[in-house]
Length: 260
Image (cartoon, rainbow, N blue to C red; front, side, top):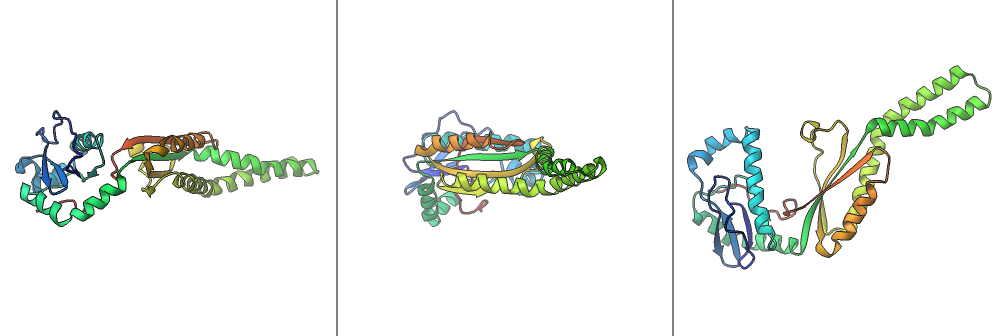
């Protein structure tokens, strides 16, 4: 099962294929439509799936295809995406879910109607922050030298400033992150903070200080983008990235991930 939308909201292109190369089809139950595909239980059964989910190449490929199906549906209206490998043994299981949890799906669809998810990630170069803070503190050391202290004392003061700056770089980065998030929340309908990604996944050596998703009303997209753009030039050593638009994975919570 890929996603749920309203009965009249599914404009999925007929050429979209699912994770097993299957044709994605629709199941209508009352006012809801589920997007599903039939897959081989030998390839997607519990034992096979447990092994495949440990294969990062397999997982990345299937996640990309799953997202493509969801995105195709989202292009024509609100959608509740389901997680990869949400499995049912039959169409009846899907229909039962739609009947029993229909109110939850409808509330989730109402919450994302007319809105789009955008991702914002912020990174900082810790050396750049430390150097900036050290330079600010170093002004005091220079003033002390001018008042008559020797070069040795001035060096020690500068060194202390450098060490103190490194220690406070993390707290400074945290303050920046909180400020950015607080400002962006003012122009969105909802927000979600996600854990910072491992550098092995980002391929970056700098710190990820913000990994957030924002649900933005369509008419406020431009102000939201403009605010993000302002933060790209806000502080030296700060890098802010905007991604999207995405299907509302962070906001359209679906009841359950895997069912019988």
